[in-house]
Image (cartoon, rainbow, N blue to C red):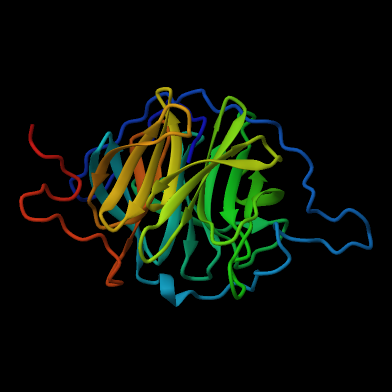
Length: 323
């Protein structure tokens, strides 16, 4: 997740001892174009309006029991040092965070209705502002939200669409908003089967998209690039899935999840990637909040999918060995 953010502080607090993440000026590497008229809106009076990037895979809001044991956590990530922070809520999954108008905003899929919710951190607490709307509708079927703030101040939301249908969901769909709550369909970014968890960063007018391909063994992440509204081409691949891509200090940064832990990669060109570190911690679905040290992620309680503890002799989760 990438964002053109303010340098103002936005500091959640908690009742547990947690290092306070600090805000810093974010890189100005991701200018973005002005939104254009969506191609999926109704074009003639006789053409039914399509909501989102597909006309299948959407359902009425409904409770999602499979997400009830998922927790959203807010911590900090500085280099390879992770502080797990504190729990924001139970019953939410696949979060993404953004420093927007001097506050940390979070989008996630809620267990209450299986829609994407939007909230803001106020005095250390997550205030749920409710379900987002897409093209004037509230529905289930879009998941894996990833937010960017564009140069003109609008918000771009990339999601996996068509989730509520048999078979493979898709495509990867891009939406736009001026307030983070009401979105309209902008474009289809990638229409390939079995691609999940999109993450986007914009660098010098070029859009970079990371998508995960989960598997019982050998999950991978693919990295694509392209121009806004155009075709995307495959640029690289790394191990692990559920990616988070960003651009910092002149380099691409990429986080992925694997049974071994959260894998940290870097790249100078978005094509060749170097594994920097593997961090063990009991969570996944990582999202760094560009311009700050904040880090929002998901824990799955009692689901048997949490990352294993470190072997004897290795440091606890979130700590690095003494030098």
